[in-house]
Length: 219
Image 1 (tube, one colour):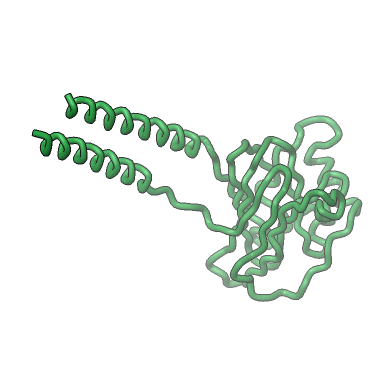
Image 2 (cartoon, rainbow, N blue to C red):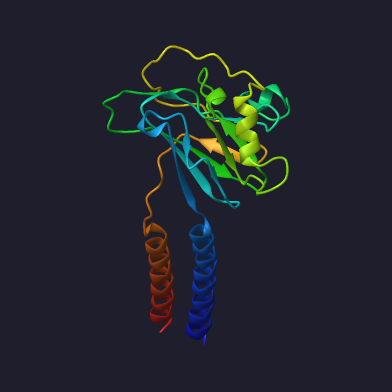
């Protein structure tokens, strides 16, 4: 009787753990990583210039040659940091990312999407935003605040970009910030592993051995 009760308890715990892990895995699988190239082929563009993202998705900004950045801005002031327009929001800011002409590795700045709100962004290098180097997450497809209108506003000189420092060696630990619709960090895309499944299997094995061992001792 003791053996049966112990076995049932262990089995229930194992099933519960498997269910929780499965739910977490499904949530992770539903999240998407969007790769955005910044200044590829010496161009003054984000490629793609906009993305449709869901909560939990991550945007990887990969910086190419020259010296670019990505800052969160607003529709009304495309080339200015959002913090200069809305003081209650810090916004994300990658800092300048100088990349040598012969570079083989390209730095990545990651922004995690927290909701479906529209996020406006631009390059803060002098003159780049005014030449149309802007980006958006979930921009409206119609109305007066489309990406096309946003880019036109940037090129009209609606707001001035911050002045840039001289080209320098990329910093080891870039800055990070928080935003109403996103959170940011400097990191490369994580590699998928099977560690979660291994840990679960090991835990189940230990529990079953404990149950059988206890039953054997009572006998």
